[in-house]
Image (cartoon, rainbow, N blue to C red; front, side, top):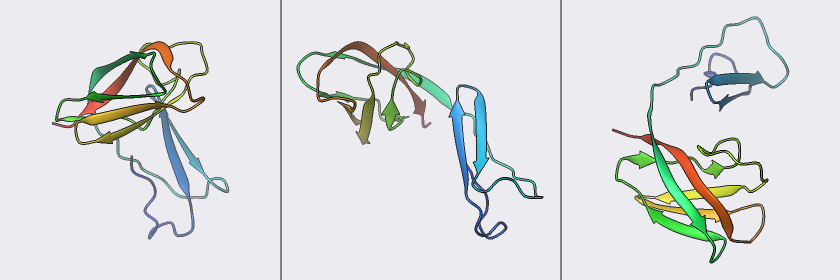
Length: 120
């Protein structure tokens, strides 16, 4: 995601978020008389199956070399949505993806799946 060029719009802070195919751009302090452009890049996604984990609040899996996963997983961002309030942090180092339950320190029974970006 690309925000405002701070040299063109000094002192103006923007945030860009995505929910499915909807993109929301917010400017702190409201909008001024200027046009803001963002650059959206096409990405191919691959579904990564994390699965359940009944032993602890953390699980590590091995990914393909060309995959990059998001940092947060919850009921709104998961491939297989659920109704529980469970949230997870995802930490990736190379091909190792460590998933940690972040709402409580407990195992999980949800069959987690997440969309990750295929880099090549």
